[in-house]
Length: 141
Picture 1 (tube, helix red, strand yellow):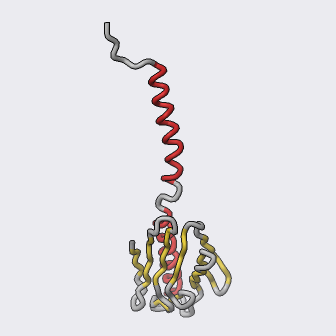
Picture 2: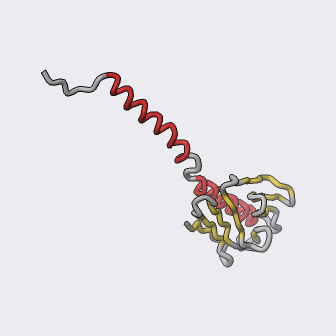
Picture 3: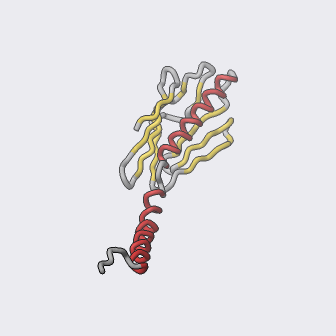
């Protein structure tokens, strides 16, 4: 009589090994999954917010200031911070604009540039460009 099945001990051993391997691997895979996408979308949303607010009033009240050294950017309303966004240590940020970004009443940016997030570990990057003439914002991968 031939027995082609597995014993309960063999099945439990294999499932335990698979569980241990998954428990070790999944946190490393999912820890920063989509982080750059999320942060670039948030920056894009903040830029569009200050553009819309500037088009409502004749004087610019909202601005966005990037501090590359601290890994933060600040959304300001007349020199008071209303939102501070900090990046994880693994990421560096850079902005090519010469100063704080704000918009005229026509929606034209003052100090436009490119906001870039770089993953120091993998050297992947994601950029948000503010077009100087129109104020259009574009995400580049």
